Image (spheres, rainbow, N blue to C red):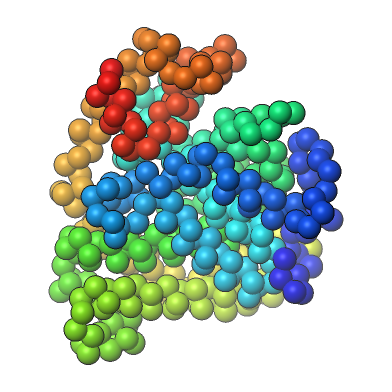
Length: 364
């Protein structure tokens, strides 16, 4: 927690606790323990081998799903500290928010969703909850990580342009402010580091970028013309955008929270609107950057040309494992009776790194 937690911050006293009661730890809070359990789980480690935008291994300088997650947590901690929220809870949600992402990024998610169309679909936020509630099993008394209710709420209600929250799984109308911080930290992080990685890859036209207001302002702020090293210029530009958006979020959120007159955590849960926000001006600036990245990076032909290949590969692997589930580890086969064959296969594939998925396809 911050030194002076706000009355509307999540605290252990206000928490709904864990599904399975546990003895308190002598020197770590419950939300610190959540954060540590997430960091030590196998699904977190595998994020290192999962695509963010560029496939892992193509270049050591591009982000992976793991480095994205760490950057989200850093931004989340900063915002939570300044808003006097529960920093450990914010960090736990940030670190776990992408545990459910499958190999090959959002393309992989869409393909798995199509393959699972008749069996409940696939969505990475729901998968994150499956991982922390069921698939991870490091304890003898129960399955899952037995996370605090508020940590799970933040995962299930994670919102963003590419995310559909599983709000029906929880009674609350809205997430805690800590969960809202994780949402906006994720959005700031991926837009800024995807901008940097896209420039580094040479996929973004600098002339077109200069028409994007937030980019042009950042270049002016760092006096980009005086920085001769292209790599340094790209990095400083992205960092200037991050600083601008984080600073704006802190100021706008403080005003928004005061305007909404929330006094307690219950007030936050009952509020229909998110209170952790960007100002209208910066929200529009970020939306302009997002639109540019969608059209010029995510839909770039150099990235799209791999989508059909991935669709074919994942489709073959899914069908093969459904026909021969004995090719899966016994750990995943044990879920078949209760969860169904297709869901067990989906869980196994979703947990794979890009490289392991390709390796298994080569073997079978």
